[in-house]
Length: 93
Image 1 (spheres, rainbow, N blue to C red):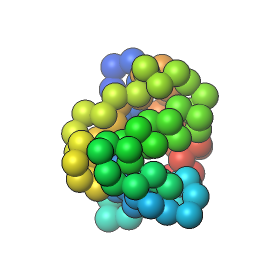
Image 2 (image 1 turned 30 degrees about the horizontal axis):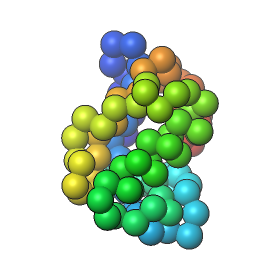
Image 3 (image 1 turned 45 degrees about the horizontal axis):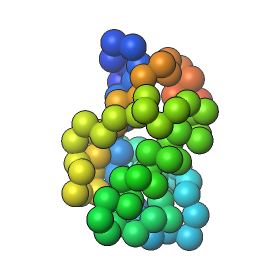
Image 4 (image 1 turned 90 degrees about the vertical axis):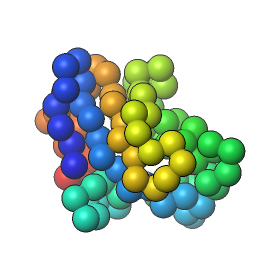
């Protein structure tokens, strides 16, 4: 799910670490499922997610903030400087 917040968007994500490639899968139980190649060890999956989103949205990593879900697969991420419609197009949801 994507929602508009002041200055950007908030994404509700379900992450699958240790995947063969980084990719957005689509909706999964009300969240956006994203596969990440990084393993779920020592925060590497979180770093991989932020790097992937940075490349996908073509914005600096500093504009992406992990709000909730640091140690789990369900994550909430805020992205500054991105409009709701643009996020929907890039995430294909």
